[in-house]
Image 1 (spheres, rainbow, N blue to C red):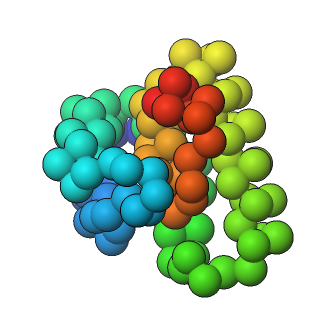
Image 2: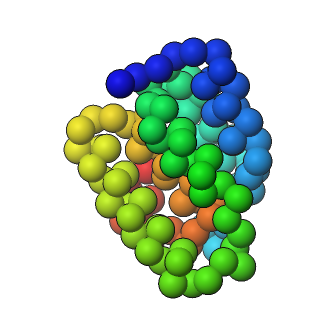
Image 3: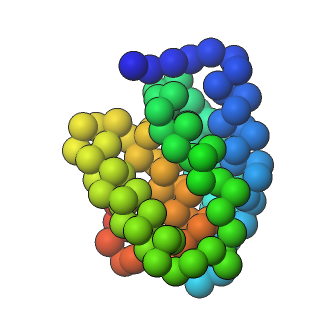
Length: 114
């Protein structure tokens, strides 16, 4: 179920523009994050509407959110990213990985996954 419609493309661009800075402890520069965004945008035709919806749903979450809630969400996302990668749906996995880059402290294995 892959979509390539202008509305979804614009939605991806809008989502990426909402968070333009990685969590500081991840040590990922704004220029590197911009390169990740460029890869995502070049792959936009392969991103599912489901993954766009997941990203959009949790985008408003702030760093001050309760730790328990963040940990559950980040664990679920890491597992989903691994699932998407194993299915070779790399654009989906990269978009969700980008969410973790800006919202969470990355675990060492995530750098390898990304």
